Image (tube, rainbow, N blue to C red; front, top):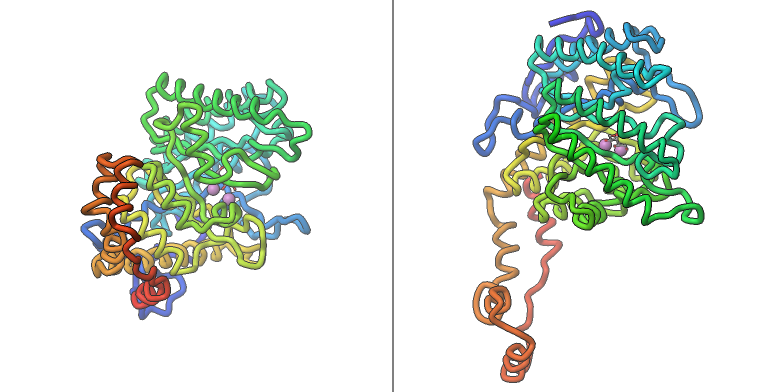
Length: 438
Ligand code: XLS
Ligand code: NI
Ligand code: NI
């Protein structure tokens, strides 16, 4: 294990709930089995390169103030390579099995596309060495199609066809390096794929371009033999006023309309759900119902701040709900829990990166244990099942199995006269039930 960047932190260990050591796990015990699977395999945690290794703490009111002694502040390839080694020291000490990155997080953008590609190759070489040395894997790769001014009007949905072309070249390369690094997935998040005003926007044409772009990616995936999973990541707004992949339902509809449904799953982020006016539980349940829940960007917003604050998850109720859905669908396959989250600007010391991730991992471990206990107890599932009992026999069964039509239903009701009264929804009782376990 290297020890250059975080000399005062050793490998984070599980010490159990009684431990008072802030640099230890109290709940996350990677080898502990729950429901027949280790915690490590349940969560498939990942660290986001962009926040954890490129975040500076800058906000619209002030520059970055994060202390990152290993970073020389330059845009050089050598600095990027060195940073990559630091990233793996961090990942190793934290004991997280995966990471995720954008092309431009890991390597500096050059003056030309060719130079950018060379820079990326130079850093990917180090990432590959470090993956080999540590056994840490790439959960998914992606391309940054939103920071450079060439994407001011979007990338694949830009009014400028050249922006589409440049984005295609960038994604081509990002897919190639993801394949080279054995990445298990590739994510499309449409940062500026939307509009700021409809007065200047041909919405239909832009959406068709987005679909065309994704089809080209699907074709290229086949061409290079990349077997990883494609994800689309919903977000309603920010930086644009409206993003086309605004929420899970919009994404599912878009994928169906443009014949992409079988090619992409969803990568769902908690703070994006909140921005869309949904709960994370709603977004996950909607995606899982369609068999399209692929991966999760684990973070949380702030109740009092209305933007994508990307904080680390600390709410046990929230992680319990997430793990109920994940367990309900039988767990992740290619996906996992990626901490798309950043430390607060005020938390500027390197050690805060550890505190933040440890907290997130412990919060998920609590959520998993609670969700598993709720499932084992069975009362919640039984309540839901019983609530639909009228569909299991009689007229309900006839409707579900296609043995009824308007005529037969009219005859049924004429004879019966009135609906059998329903029982209460018992919302408060069920909320109390969940709290029994929390
Ligand atoms: C931004 C998104 C982004 C994606 C990857 O809000 O969450 O970080 O996860 O491009
Ligand atoms: Ni995200
Ligand atoms: Ni986000």
